[in-house]
Image (cartoon, rainbow, N blue to C red; front, side):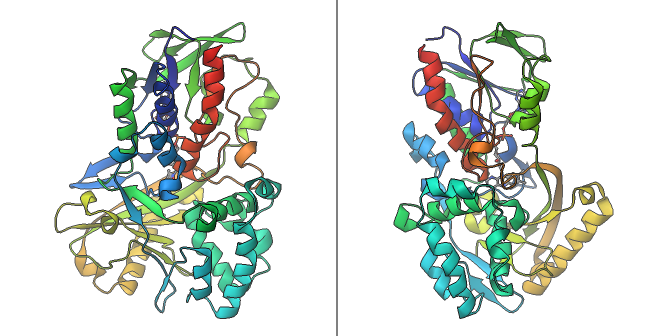
Length: 445
Ligand SMILES: Cc1cc2nc3c(=O)[nH]c(=O)nc-3n(C[C@H](O)[C@H](O)[C@H](O)COP(=O)(O)OP(=O)(O)OC[C@H]3O[C@@H](n4cnc5c(N)ncnc54)[C@H](O)[C@@H]3O)c2cc1C
């Protein structure tokens, strides 16, 4: 057993989940986080008394998620009160249509004609009942391989649910990853299609609960400290150097931010061979999005999420955050966020962003005639380089960054760029579950 603490770099969901599982085994950890708050990409801010997430964040698979599993493993799941996100609808220009919660709901989905529902079921049913192992054979195949055979209506369904798989287009999702999502959403296979959000508001609430437990266990979550370098000697980790020059001794380091950044930033040349670096850099696939928070003086819809369907809509998802939990907004005010994928160059162009925001406002006022009257303020955000949650066919699941590397003893990787199922924060927590036995093996030596 190591006499030094395990150093974890980053206090996002991946780093904190790893920390939780280790402190639960009485292993001392030191988490260094360069930002002044926990949560990583899920961190929130307080703006005009509303809690604004860093873009819309939602927990897929509710109590079947890897995040919930990690919390259950350490017995702290009751500390995180979750609101269910279940009232989801499509809007197709003429009206609202219920989003299917289970596979059989597809039969009643009024968004598309009956015949299209049947052809959709013919695709979804075999997926929902196949094995996880079998899905791996489809990891290099794009989802479009099956959707291209579909009629216009069924294709529209896939375009709309793309947003829930956190991909910008259907050709970016691997059929294998999509099938795993369908299996995990299948109640007949012990799954759930429910989504969740922290009841107290702010997706980083999850990270806060995790960080509190880690400090209760007498380990450290140190904010505002950035790691500059990982020291390696004779193929073994010997410590980390912080940007303020401090040396921290350790023989075990876990990197929790995207591996393709880490291997280019934290190591002396020659630690990894060129082929490995090229391979890891392939994971650096990004998407660009514009998301706009709108604060309203009245509730314009009682639903929680609405997906406008059809190519004409710029708004791809409307998330009524204060309908999920009122705690994100001050009394009497309501918060929504509307998102759309964009081309990378559009994020550098303020007049294009303004145009997108104006188009979103136009669409919202068409769907909701009270929107303009109720609008208090708006706040747009544009991300050029959002690490793509779902990267592309071929770069999923076991083809992501491994949790350990042969040539450096004591070095581990977790987070959404590493081996794990593929949806966002679920994937970050899942990577920690998978990496944990490997870490324990190393620490028990
Ligand atoms: C706009 C947007 C919307 C999203 N929506 C969803 C959603 O609805 N649902 C979902 O599940 N996922 C969503 N995601 C994805 C999700 O945010 C990420 O998959 C997840 O947060 C990744 O967690 P992580 O721990 O792997 O990495 P991160 O959260 O990036 O954590 C890594 C941490 O390491 C820190 N760090 C980096 N370098 C150093 C250093 N040298 N020293 C110290 N610290 C360092 C960083 O500051 C960061 O806090 C979304 C992402 C974005 C950007």
